[in-house]
Image (cartoon, rainbow, N blue to C red; front, top):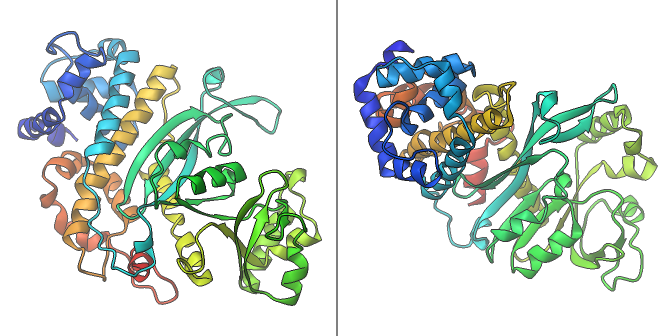
Length: 440
């Protein structure tokens, strides 16, 4: 790490890149700087945070050491602690918003007449949670653990565009604001022609109605227990009885006693192995509220979807394939936790925790832009040996000494990345990039 951080030339490249984003001007606007930096400048402090999160050492001493090497001066951990304040958090939050709006996107060509060409964007809204020190319960209220004690948990809500591999939005909130409470947040950014993919945590019929009113589309699994009526909204639709007679269903029905949402109901049978696995998992669930009845267990033999996209836009088979794309964001969350140490938040104040999380999200955004998307675009016409985002994240963690090169001299590592970070050939199922190519 000393070789990397002591590299004067790399630091100059860094300052030049950050200057293009107006980092000092932004630092003044957010109150982090009152004048030109004398002892701790924001660009070096930000890089120190990057080095800290990759190195899995979140101490003030680690930041101060890296900062001193970058600026070629002695900086105490007390000086660093003083500068990690509310103004620094506001700066990081603003810098993250700028990064989201300016970074490069995937140059994926969607052929006319393809499945995905019908949509402006394909958006996934999903969240991940981070356990915090108990003393932060007041700011980040969570749930009760097995002993009945309250916990502190942070929730990061993300909106991701699958077509361009871009994060559009991050929102940080207490865990007590659950996914259903956040289900309507996406309405602020939806555009006509968007398709929104969601898991059951965000299942809110009123939110689906509002998405439809914005001339956009939704696709979700059906939540068990939701009342289903025939299209007139008066007669109960017995899904179990229908599926006992015919395993396939693709019909327009009405959902909800109050909401009366008219939408399409699609069922696709799963394999016996998948159905058996689901039932075993449901029976073992310790939450007695989730104790499944006979009908619920029976319905686990199907993937059951709700959407407002008609059959001319998406067939039942295409619906199943598109919904599989939602798994992409789960892979991203896994890479955050496994390779970018986003769970390794300091056991410190709210300000320190927020600074760590925002810096990590900035790093993730820049990593996708400067490394993954750049290399993807260079190999866009090659449908074989496509880059694996998860493997690439792992490579970054294991080769953390090359941190600066990833952002400012990426071509030095391209050969190694393209050799070690591609998908393995698989015969039994498609990887994410192959599935995207198949749909487009």
